[in-house]
Image (cartoon, rainbow, N blue to C red):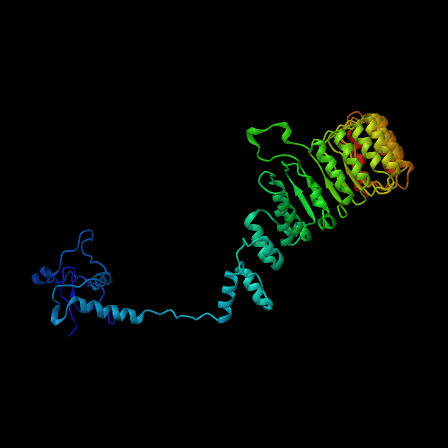
Length: 480
């Protein structure tokens, strides 16, 4: 005979026949149908539901049995048994039906990989480990390993990708054409140079970092240099043989309310130090010193180093304060032995005399292919000098003279060169924002472009040439 169920107080609950065969004996008892009322004795035997329980419902029997099994009961159970035995038997049945998770012993190789990874900083070696296990170890080693350890032993690109992403955002080697290890080494050296403080860090420590990173560094973009460090350190030893591109902005980021003008721009001593280092830059092809408050005296000092350099092909001196004297110093440095192909002097103070000096460069340089003089003060005279030089040039492919106060004289000289110099490979011409050119100057340029088939781009907006002339010039260019 089945044992009766117990209420919360321990009193036996009258049993009823299950409505459906197979229903668990622990399920909640149903109330008798309305046409078969229970007896008075049955209603008295039914316990009062505990507080918080809706009328006509009972608490979960599983929770009741589990609560009873957690503490000994002093109330006697029915038919010679007690509540503890009933709860114990039900708990045992529940444990028997519950699935057991098997214990899997790790493989010996897995244990070895975990041990090597955890102690790699203390014992940095892969020995003769097969490649698949080397990859497994590098996947588990810490991302803050000392650089001298990780740099020498770890070549796995995924490790360097994760280490780079931990320090910097928006890194994409597919755009830059680099490996993750190279990108990390360059960014790390840039950060060290930008934050260098001689009062905190010894120069010898920085030299050691430069020497260690040298095999992996090809390009450096330094966005601030408050220490005014002598950049000759970058061309010492092996780095001087591999550094191809250098961009330096002398300033201070996030300066806030502590702004003073002397925090920004190169000093004369900085220019002299860089000029002295340029002859040792055996691989440097691109040098950018934009927004560095360079004036004529500083550019004159810098030009002395450029004259002895035969590797720099791209020079960016835009957004500075270079005037005619500075332009003459550059023109003197860019002689017939120069290998410079791109010169950017955008947004400076070059006037007519400076334009005359740069025109001589166009006549003698065997390599210059791009000249940007936008946002200067050439005037009609300086523009005419540039135009006359084009008649003797055979290398220039791009010329930008926008916003230079050009007039009819300058455009006439340019148009004449386009018509007479069949060897001129000029493909891009920009004379925008020169309102003094006017309709007559526009007509001269239009007639020249009919014959100069090499020009594929020509921007003449905001030069008062007239809508018909601008449309005709655009049609000539687009048809080629």
